[in-house]
Amino acid sequence: MPELPEVETVMRGLEPVMLDAVVTKADIRRPNLRWPFPQNMAARLEGAKILGLRRRSKYILCDLSSQETLLIHLGMSGRMLIEADDVKMPGHFYDKISPAEKHDHVVLDFDTGTRVKFNDARRFGSMDLLPTDTADRHPLLASLGPEPLGNDFHADLLRARFEGRRTPIKSALLDQKIIAGLGNIYVCEALWRSGISPKRLARNISAQKLDQLVPSIKDVLVEAIEAGGSSLKDHRQANGELGYFQHNFSVYGREGEPCRTDGCVSDIRRIVQSGRSSFYCPNCQR
DNA sequence: CAAAGTCCCTGGGGGC
DNA sequence: TGCCCCCAGGGACTTT
Image: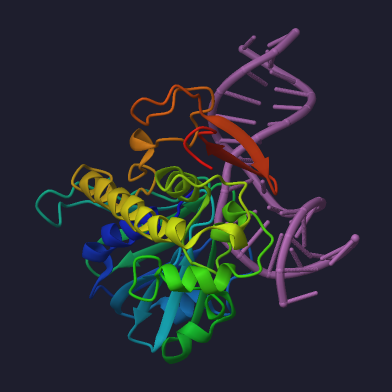
């Protein structure tokens, strides 16, 4: 489930705990998640200091003093659980340090007395270690499109990348090579905001609609990050699910419920496109 | 190359 | 209460 805003929220929650901390113990509790863990992962993590945390698309990158970078993907159900016996920062309340439980696949202990657990019931997540200086050439990162919140994302880019594409706009926006970080929820929300049907082919979106789509995407992501950021002030810092924007969804998961556009009397519909649900208003979205 | 389908995995929810 | 079935979904891989 985590899309760009949730990953950003999780990363921000990890930052005060992991930054400048040294891994004293890495407990790798199974051989793999989605893919096998890298060779000697525990030994390569132990003794390393976390120099920085970054996000690229839906990936979290932890730059280590060993000149390696820990690459983390939360998949569908991945969570980073933070534990500490003492309150480390005002306003931060962590669960007490506790033994690994079901689905806690990687447990990192830090010299600061905190513990971070990677918990992932469905194991669609992944972890890898790669050289920091060539991190963006990693196979999982190399072909990603631009960040939707970055300066490289604008209507001209979409115009170029949608040219000749016979695929529905919904599928095109989910293609991480075109834009990186959007998932099913925020694609549905952005299309509703910009009045574009998910069924319209990418190559047939007018320039005017593309001009509306870009800010719709940026706005919905920024609002979701802000909603996640406010949840960080509560007690579950790194739990991406709490950061979810679900209370503010306009179409996602609202099949049969009224469209929220002022004056619109249509109900939200759900269709399946390439195996995934699309939610939209047949009246507002053309 | 593009586009569509398949698969991985498990918890949760609906139906009975 | 319990069982069965289906669904959720990111992204690599396979097929068309």
